[in-house]
Length: 133
Image (cartoon, rainbow, N blue to C red; front, top):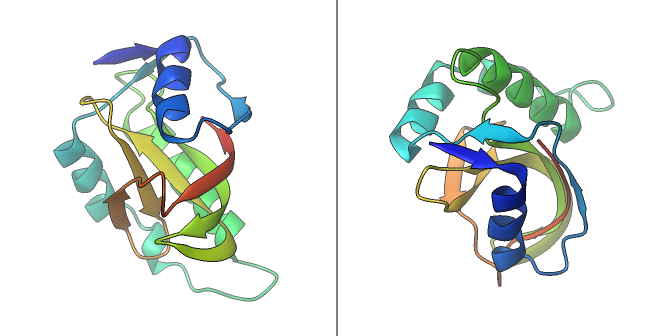
């Protein structure tokens, strides 16, 4: 399913009305089904990268997974998987960079690139401040 950048902004605003720093680099994006996102994550090598302070921290993992997603889905267009910076996840306040994906059902998912963890975004428990896709 293709989503326009306007549709993506609307989906994001439904979850995070205060989110104002959104950089969408294309006018249309491919929104894969959730099972396809999960398949991509299983094939991704990012979760196998060793964490090293100052070298491979959360921003590095998010960047790498975003790059792998661009390559993996390139035949269908830029995917609705981007990098995000937030300050609360699962109700715990912490500054962290990870990935956000929008599936074809227009649900927003948080993706932890260091573990391939994925969960549906919760507007009360997850807070994104900056997103690029």
